[in-house]
Image 1: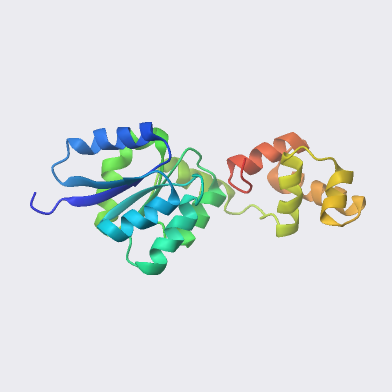
Image 2: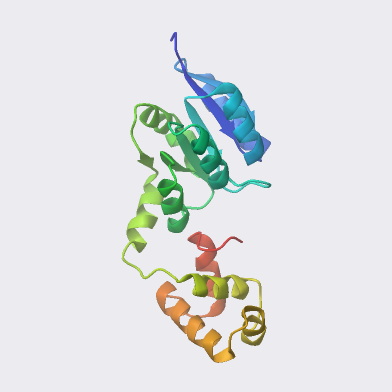
Length: 207
């Protein structure tokens, strides 16, 4: 084709970028124009190449994928960015779509869905992988944790006891217990460890 879809691949793992390169290599309607290994490089490469589609890893050192996307779209509002992630966490999906992601794809599905997703987003559509859609639908009616509860959940995940959490947040131990009870109920968790695991899986807190 005379005008292939120009693509920027952003991922901190060289193996993932190699995999993307291999998938795109056989496609006459696509061209990988640049790569980046972190969010800072992603912004620079976008400025230099102005790709049609950016494949952006969500979890990266220095600047993560969400922040890099926000920075790119602040300069280039029409940027079409597909988020790549290992997790189908519903909170992450909603956050990414709210700040302008046009697609959300699990890395485990790259070989099956990458090309179709790129073409659909390039054509102006928004695309969620089936797993990501399921996660969002599964929790769309569930009560969201409050910012105060997220603070407690983050400290639970860091292995802190109620007394330590109370000291760190300058609240009473009873307040911590109340928030923990609410967290377990909202997440459908049986104990603190499970609540922390659910929090990471759904993207409510970072591991």
